[in-house]
Length: 124
Picture 1 (cartoon, rainbow, N blue to C red):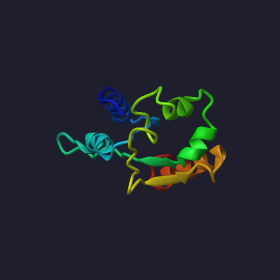
Picture 2 (cartoon, rainbow, N blue to C red; picture 1 turned 180 degrees about the horizontal axis):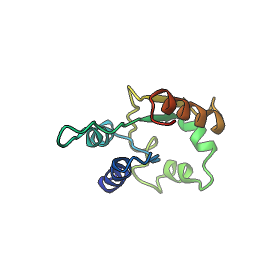
Picture 3 (cartoon, one colour; picture 1 turned 90 degrees about the vertical axis):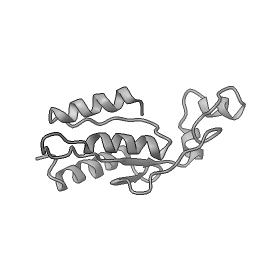
C-alpha cells in the first residue's frame, strides 16, 4: 500500500466514512504502517478502527483466475518482482478477518465482513 493510499484511506476514516481499500500488500511492515497510521491520535481522540481483511488465495488458484495472463508472464520472467512468483508474500498473522477465497463465494465474503462490522458497532 502506498503512503498516498494510506493517507487517503485515513482521510475517509477521519470523516466517519468506512473506507474499503483493496491492495496486494505483500510485506508485514507496510501493513503495520497502515495500522499505525490509524492508531495515531491527537488531543485524546479515539484511534480510528483498522480492520485487516486477509483474502487468502493459493497462488495456483490466483493463476487460474488471472484474465490478463500476468502469472504466466511472471513465470516466463517477463515480469520481475511479481508477488508470489519472483517476490515474496508475507501472509498476515493476526488479520481481524481471514477469508479463504477458494472456499468462500463473494456473497459469503461480503456477509463475513459486514457481520464483523456490525459486531464491532461500526455499522448500524
